[in-house]
Image 1: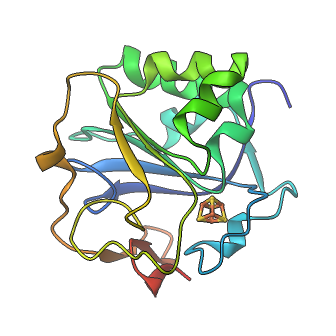
Image 2: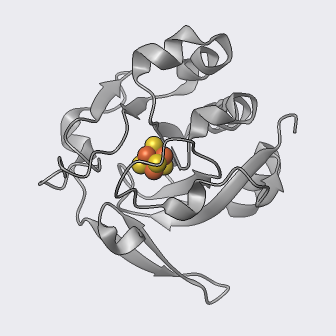
Image 3: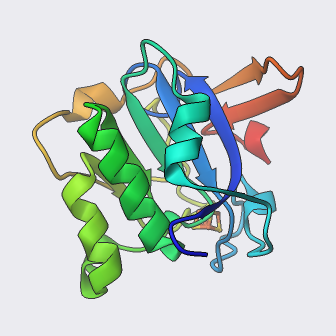
Amino acid sequence: MGDNLNIHAVIPRSRVNGPGTRLVVFFQGCARHCEGCFNPATHSFEQRELITPEALLGRHLSKGIEGITVSGGEPFAQPKGLLRLLELAASSGLSTLVYTGFKLEEVMEDEARDACLAFVDVLIDSPFASDLIEPTLLARGSTNQRIHFLTSRYVIGDLYMQGRAEVIIGADGVVRKTGFSSLDA
Ligand code: SF4
């Protein structure tokens, strides 16, 4: 697959997936099957949409975007493409936020995954736990998930969202729901 990404969906402009207005990329494929996962349609590793990171940003990046958020699926299941996507974003001055079911320590154990961390501002780690739902507007699904500030770009106050979820009607007329509630299921 090379640097190609197998992606589930892209939301070009979201305000509930990290600080400011963000481009959100949902990777396809996750082996964890956490009970109550908001995005079960992302679990299959079947090919959904193959796209290079360059083409993805070229197609979806628009003015006024503060950064990219990478979610899933499991972003670190595609470390080569993830690295390229993060490199490109960072070199364009975009901030980077990545959600993963791995713990940070597990990411660091693998050379290819660890290389991605050099381009991540905020990593939100650990599998979703349906019995530990985040009760506040903090941008995580459950309270066991840890928020790692890998650079000084953001502080915890930046991770409180204006709402738990949003509904977006794309230019293609497709209605998409995103954020941190069962609206995503
Ligand atoms: S790690 Fe994330 S995408 Fe994977 S099953 Fe758990 S909540 Fe869903």
